[in-house]
Amino acid sequence: MELGPTKTIGGWVSASEGATGFARLDAEPFPAFEPGWVWLVGAGPGAPGLMSLLCYHALQTCDVVVYDALVNPDILRWVKLGAELEYAGKRGGKPSPTQKDITLRLIDLARAGKRVLRLKGGDPFMFGRGGEECQHLAGAAIPFRIIPGITAGIGGLAYAGMPATHRDTNHSVIFLTGHDATGNMPANVNWAAIARASPVIVMYMAVKHLGEIATALMDGGRLADDPVTILSNASMPHQQVAETTLGEAEAFVAANDPPTPAIVVVGHAADWRSLLDWYKGPLRENPIG
Image (cartoon, rainbow, N blue to C red):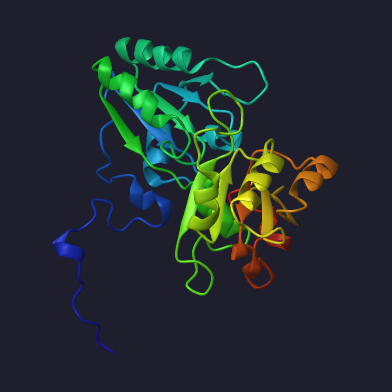
């Protein structure tokens, strides 16, 4: 059989034509990471394979990485030889740099002519304080680029067999944080409105205050038997999924102390797990994801 002429998308042919596998990326026109710039990059929910090509490119071209506690250390092994690594993790209840310290460090490094990779778990703009950091960078006239990442509230749920949306379960989903800047349950959230607004609620950093949150949601009209799923270490080989209900959530946390970081899902997204729970057995053995 005679094959037709080779077609290209938009007439564009890769400069690495003839290469195979990941080598095909070597000659691609990735954006230049210029000295004095800060790139805020989301590394994804944990599994190294869930990072973006731009994230990998940034790791290969930066001079310094300022990384968060939720970044999988296995991702850092892909940093270019000679790049500096600076830990700037913030974990609740543990000594950590202030947000002001981190932002000032990013500015200082950029002004010193470094290519600064600010690496965050998940997505920088999903409860990652990326907006605050960009605000201060802009105020200091530091040029920056934002590279989104897969957030645990979507990608993590997929690794637990829970679609964030499904037309037979929910046409909407709410994302919220389980604590505010003081570390307490957010006081400015209208929990009664949240309880009624969406069938599925996805909460970050909510394990500590889950009992209070559950009470607030039930006071707002949610049923005590509404499913609650606690997803710990999403997309990692040691991922854990625990199931309870709103009415039993406080006692469950007290008795089991679920590992963190964790995502808490309220609602019937959990109904799909029995059918869609794919990340198990030998699939857990691959460290890339």
